Length: 356
Image (cartoon, rainbow, N blue to C red; front, top):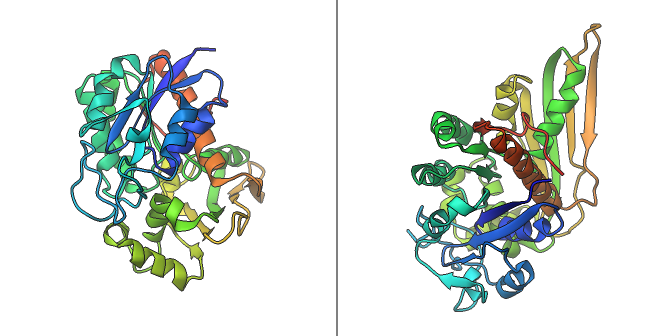
């Protein structure tokens, strides 16, 4: 097994859990982590326990949530949706870190010694993650980039960059979390029973007893999928307005027909038409127990003319963090294998089998 190292851009809920889960994954060593105020880099390997302890409850943003610009600075006073407490917010609270106004640039400057980069930054501008990828490509980075983005329209923006990625030697895996990600891959496997897929229905359940305060980015982005809202609305809403939406639903919010990239990712893999994919689910911020079992149903026609439905379910005891971060690191391992074999460009989770 090849030993590989990686960096995490963003140390909110997803980024922090990436660092934590990586300590349980053989062959992966985190060597860099950053947020808007600071960066920690150690090519021998970060002390993950110290970094997480130092930043617990102290994630870099401000109470209103400031936009994350492409250089990690602050553009406005609302919208990123990540909490902050203390004077030394975020990564700079760690003894391993230094304060900086250009955290992403600082990681890029060290990227010739970094095998893979996981982008776990707030994505309230549709082209934000593609623009971050541009900066690595412009710096002649050659390696792996992985994101856990959700929205369908971003995939096309990444595909537009595929030729540049191939020229630079970049293997980019998009939508590598739970949905899209793990559940997209499960749908692709379930589809193999059929000669024609008629429908893919993804229905998820997430319990977050810690609520909005500890999961601002996730909750805020999900609210953008409610009727009457879009990503621009969610971006501009204050914390109080987000809390009011949660209260309006008594802390349990049901989503239907979400703009999740599972549809375009399954279409680009040749599984089915994007229009045949539906994604929805239930978010409960009052309990850790899942309000419904996460299920993928793939309906299709078999070679002998029968119509059937294959079903895949996640265990109710697997957390959102386990179902997002485990697959993301697994897809990172798969991308590292592809990259070392000289396979560059943009890949979706329906095109790769994640490593373990």
